[in-house]
Amino acid sequence: MKALDSQLAPLLKFLDGYYAKSPALPKGGKDFLVAAAPWLALLGALFALFAAYGVYQLMTWTNAVVNNPYFQAYAPGSGGFSLWLILSIVVLLIWAVFYFLAFSPLRAKKTKGWYLILYGMLLNVLNAVVTLSIISVVFSIIGFLIGYYFLYQVKSYYS
Image (cartoon, rainbow, N blue to C red):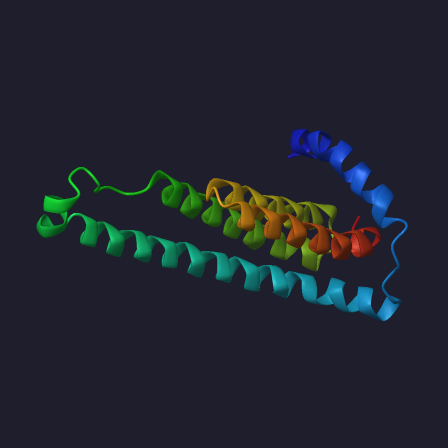
């Protein structure tokens, strides 16, 4: 993780430069975010698991339809699992693991938990890139920038 932290340092320095000029959250808002962060991470992990299961169900249902002999008569060679859906499931599972692993460090206010949430947010952007949808990528980047604003606001609480 230390190697990844050093690779992310230029990006974080760039973002920190912009977010330092942004309006700060009130202390009560920061305290609330720090107190709720472990539980929000746990909730995010559960959502990621449900999303991965949903994508898997969609993939198996679609595969059953596509591999139907009647469908194959009209579109031969179109069966099989989509590589993009498999990659999306893998990314969602890794995202869930990061968020589950972040729970204890966030409760203890350790920097490791803060970074695990950051990695999860970056994985969300990666998942959008994997789906090859420009709209998903744009909205994931916007979501990352908004999420990083809140992470930046509470960064000083974690040691």
